[in-house]
Length: 158
Image (cartoon, rainbow, N blue to C red):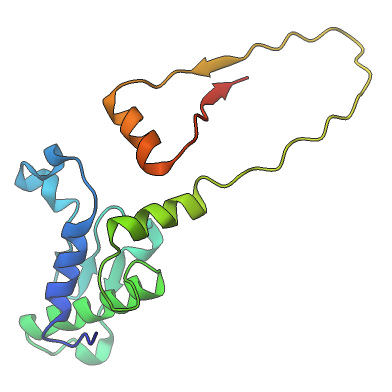
């Protein structure tokens, strides 16, 4: 796909609205604002789910004399380029689909950690270790297990 000054703002809004959110997050204007791009004079603040150091897009000095509409289009185009470089827009310059997001989460979040080596070491005194399993139950947690394939893994505190 091709993104230009005319289509960049539309694509950016489509990206913001494609983020998987709890329906209650979209019920009020204040709650929805966190998940939409926010334009100011010469800056654009991307939605809250973008890494904090990547959220702000500033307009280059050579474009400061442009009108408001043109500034917003330039900021949106720069933001689309940034989102593509971050891997948040696919090769067709569309927001990631649910399948793409799940694959990305599985790749980055549910990696198999190497097992710890058991090295016997002498202890000068007895040590008590307590393990507390964190039980997460309910419809939402069950759905996450189905969607993300956590394969029955759970969290624990030591």
